[in-house]
Image 1 (cartoon, rainbow, N blue to C red):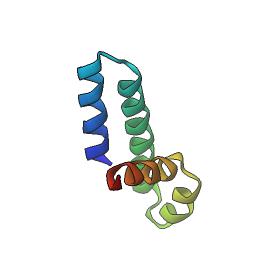
Image 2: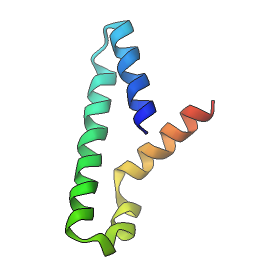
Image 3: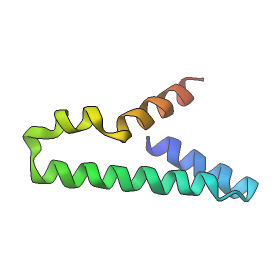
Image 4: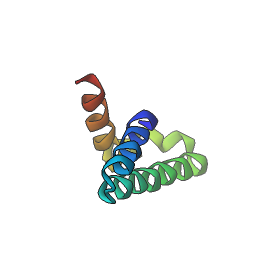
Length: 67
């Protein structure tokens, strides 16, 4: 996931685009929310992760890295 974000920032810089930067910001906000939730209730992590948007984004990042 961090590699994906780094690549998106690199592309944003190369192309002078703001959209990839916003995408990374959104990912980091989601990631932070997940870590906060984990710290509050470590036993409920799996249940929350299923409905978390980060799971979907992680799938996209994984697919992108495999191509």
